[in-house]
Structures are given as structure tokens and as C-alpha cells.
Image (tube, rainbow, N blue to C red; front, side, top):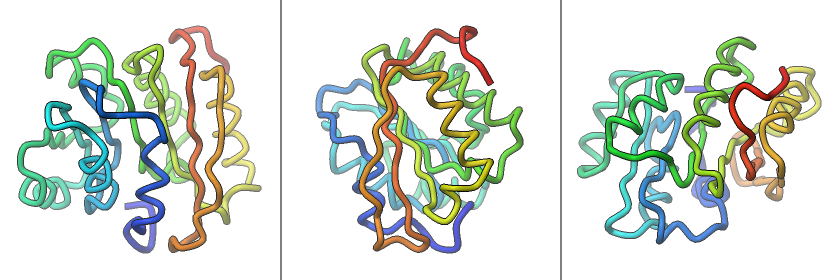
Length: 184
């Protein structure tokens, strides 16, 4: 858990990209936590769309299994994203939604997870990642944005979600670049 409170319904809505997810084969959530964003994703995907929710905390993963039967709850690090999507029988994830606490990670861990995202995301897919407003001007937040810019051809930001504790916004990242051709 990287926040003082679960994501608000308003942030959960913002986390799911405005793209149509009804035709997606598989959507992945990284850092599903208590399931606030998971619930919103379920509302926006078709019945036949698979949802894989990664959660590192074992108690939270177990709660997700009980709360959301029928989804793939994966108790593992997001670094292993590619292997799990392969195991589920998919070449790509159509959308990857991250609730991970990026500012609490080492530089190396951020790079490994972002590289796994690049290796897994469909060329026409979207990766969304939240950023807490209070960290926007910090060097670590600026560095994270530069990492996204190095890995994606197009990045847009949502409006600030003031109704979240703490307030946050979301980066929507499209046009993933090939793994191995990015900077730090």
C-alpha cells in the first residue's frame, strides 16, 4: 500500500483510460490493493475480457480473490508481468493500469517494472499510472515522468482528482517503444 487511504471512486474512474475496453482481451492491474480500481475496471470491460490483478501483499491478494471471483489475482511482483500474461495465454495486454507507489521504489525496480510493461503492452494499448499531486514537483516524480517519456511516444495527463486523499492525477501512456531502446 502506497497511500494513506484506498483510491477514491473518482480516482478509480480516472485510472481507467478513456479508451473503449469492451473489445479488450485482457486488462492488467498492477498493485490492486483493496480493489477500488479493480471494481471500476470490472464495470468498464466486457464479460469475456480477462482481468489480471497483481498484488504483492498476501492478505490483500486473498481479499481480492474473495471480493472478485472470476478474475486472475496474481500474488507476485509486477516485474514478472510478462511471464504471467504468457501463462494466461495472451501475447499482449490491451491495457495496463498501475496503482503502484512509484515514488517508494528504487530506480532499478521502477526500470524493471516499466520494462516489463513495455514487453507486455499491446502496440496500440494504454498504460496508466497515478501520481500524487504533492509529489509532482519532487525530483523523483520528475525522473519518473522522464522514464515514461523515454518509453512512450505519447503521454497525456488527467485533470487533478481533488476528491482523493491525497489528491492525484493520472498519466495515460500510449505508443510504447520497443524494450531495450529506452533511456533511464
